Length: 228
Ligand code: CA
Image (cartoon, rainbow, N blue to C red; front, side):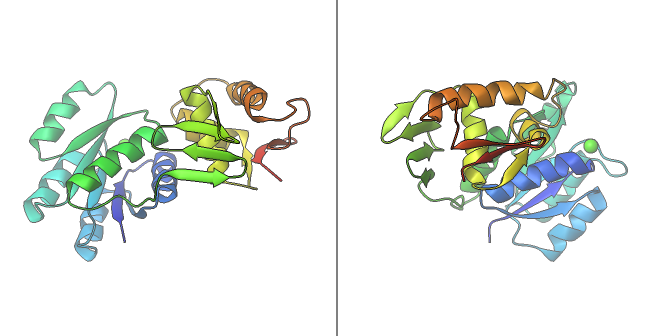
């Protein structure tokens, strides 16, 4: 199993990270305090990558990093830092972290960092050829492109991320809030209408008849669904 530890005291951020890592094929273990994180690693010596939030009640992320590093030279460590904590980067790297990700981060950025570190610590990231095939669409998650019937459809980065979320969840009703949180991040404070605007634009690009959408369907009073 491709085990990743997620240490974060804020439940919504932790579940956001966990959902996205699971979607990318990782087996996640969770901790909400530094003490708990050290216990989880002790019980699961095969954890290969640890994501450590810096700001925690009790033992902070740097201390956890220091202790993990003292016990295990091989584990890959990524610090989750806030934008306002410029020094975190330096301190984190000095305490033995391999990388850091600044909040708010996108699912794509997070997964890319974990994949890269996973590879550097000697493993292959879980994944196949990175192509999601759902006739007549092909979404290439490596170069972030979409094809319909073999024809490239130009997408913005945000549209791509919405498409990926939809195609990762075929037939599942996704609430507008869930789409907002996954695509824009839980720290996004804008209006949820941004979801509708992007869906409308996507429909113009992917639907046979945008006025009568059959791929991206509306779930009234809730959100949207990919297909059927
Ligand atoms: Ca925190």
